[in-house]
Image (cartoon, rainbow, N blue to C red):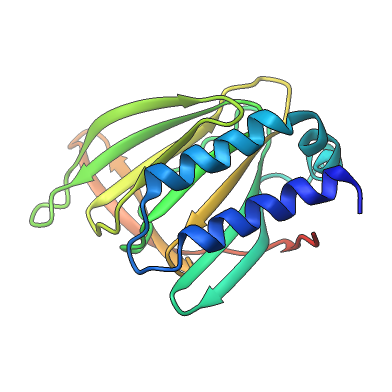
Length: 192
């Protein structure tokens, strides 16, 4: 097994090991995942070249899943300039680490009574950088590939299977937020 395959397997194992409890230490998991991405960036780039060269738009690839405690580990492919709608994660905790490229993540807090969303902050993530959120039904965010030309790839770890979520849109001229139930799809399973 080449080093490029071991790197992806190592990332999967770190995510599974750190999530052996209902509420893992997400900062610790992000640091360890980021260390591996920084240390093995060339091997990782080689392993993920087929995903990076695909021209199929935004895709989600399953790397691992477990039911107790619940976890899913995915690699996501972000076409140049791809921007997600503001969306929630159905109350799951989650962590995102950039593998290749650069991503912007805007975080929002949703008022549980009015449904109004208020931007709380913005993170810019390069290879090995991570951000995370606790299992909060009022957390939402929007992600964007910062490159005009290159595909970005990210690793996502969720405290369960994110099969459906809400996407939010601000309606003009009132500024009110509306929500739509969305279903997530998996393009395939990555072998390590």
